[in-house]
Every structure is written in structure tokens, then in C-alpha cells.
Amino acid sequence: MKNSDSLDDLAIFHTVVREGGFRAAARRLGLAPSKVSTTVARMEAALGVSLLRRTTRSMATTDAGRALADRIGPLLAGLDAARAEVAETADSVRGRLKLNVPGAVMPDVLPSLLAAFHARHPEVEVEIVVENGIVDIVEAGCDAGIRYDEVLAQDMVSIPIGPRTQQIALAAAPDYLEARGTPEAPRELTEHQAIRYRLPDGPLLAWHLVEGGRIVTAEPISRLILGVNAIDTGLGFARAGIGIIATFRNWLEKDFANGDLMPVLPENWPARSGPRLYYPSRHAPRPLRAFIEVCQDHHDG
Image 1: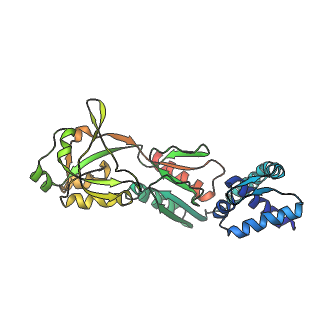
Image 2: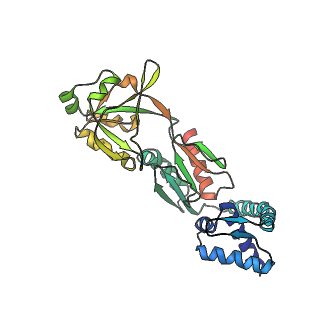
Image 3: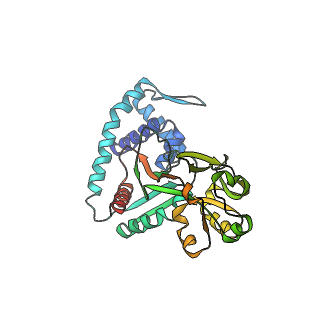
């Protein structure tokens, strides 16, 4: 093999070992699975040893394969760092940034951050994938993710992004409250119609309120159920008088100010931690590092 081909092949082989399979490595590298498989087979033929033990359901490294992966891992990491240092001497950041985010950050958290990011780095293409379940961002081919209160894998690091805390508020249209009355305690919500959200293939999002220094769960009548992927659409139904809605307080300020919606049980609204940006702990690509810097500057400012 040529030296340049050997280096590329080693990188592909190491990605297969790190990601635990050919398909996962192919997604991470942006290559066809057949390309990854034939590369490893070519390496094995050139070296005269088996590097991987394959079955129809699993893959494992041989002793020789594990020894090779252990030796080349630090070398490849050093090469990545060297490339990053060279790239940092350039005048501008280029490339692509792919984020996996929940719908809750789309209306107000991300727009201002991305506006600041694009103003600083106009040559970076940003792609946003909106999903609300727990996602393996590496498997999904994303550079980073944003989630609320998720248990992150050990090889992930995270930083706060957007508001550090957010309050969950209840609101309803004046016409609804005039017709059905305004609840005065969380227990009275059981008699009220509600606009609820359902997690993907899962339960309804619970309504938690604070009462007497403890958290209580309210069970209103589900008048309208929306998929959580449409979380930013519920306000329109609330304004139409369909029922009470539970959502982020910061989404409701304009409606409260102009009277389209009225606060419901404001003394019982709970607070929750804000979203976090998370990404693999290994060396981050430059567009992601640039985005992290913007997020930190945006908060610090």
C-alpha cells in the first residue's frame, strides 16, 4: 500500500473499532459500508493477519486488531490535533456543523445564538435535526446535541446553553377562563380541559406544580394532545380557547402582555434547569469549537 493510503486505511480501521461496527463507522466517516469493509479486508490481506472477528450479528477485534488499535489511537489523535492547530491559523472557520436538538429550543434559544454564530463565522453551514427522544449523536452523524436533564454518556461533555433556569407556566385564553372559571389550587385542574404533549411513542408530559413546598402532579382533562415535536404550536390552540396549556414562561410573555392569554396558578409554577449542549469528549471539530465559544460569549455577555 502507498503511505498515504496506509494512513487513511488506519484511520478507517480505528473508527470501526471505536464505533463498534462497519455501519456505525461508515456513518461517522460519511462513507459507504462496503468501502469500510473492503478497506479493512485489504489491510488484513496486506498485513497477513486477521484484525476483526466477524459474525452475522456482531464484530470483535482479534488480539492483533486490538494491539494495532491501541497503538495507532494516540497517533491519530495527535494528527487530528495537529490539523486543528494548523486550521486555527486560517482567517476564518469553514465547514459544517450538525446539531441534534429538541423542539423546545427552536423558538427562542437557538435563533439568537445562531445569528451571533453566523455573524462571526459566515462560511460555516449549520444543519439542525429536531428530535425529542434520547439520541446517540455519534450514531446519528451529528457533531453535538442539546437536551434537557438527560443522563449523558461518560464520553460526553456538556455546557449550559441559553437560560440557566426556565419556569414552566400555565396559561389559558380569557374566553376559556370566563366560561369555565379560573382554578385556585392545583387539585382543581382535574376539572379543567388541557392541551397536552406526548413524548415520541411514550407517555404524556406530566404537569408538575409546587404546592406547600413540595412537587405535586396535576391530571387535567386532555382535550387536545399534540406530539412533543410540535411543542411550539400549542400556543395557537390555547389562544383559541381550547384549554389550559403548560409551557415555558418565556414563551408566554407577549401573550400575557397583550392579554391573549392569562396566567393560571402563577404561585404554583415550578422551575427547571435550562438546556445543555453536549458532545463527545474527544477533539471537537473546529466549527463546533467555534459554536461553543459563541455560546459561552453569549452567556457571559
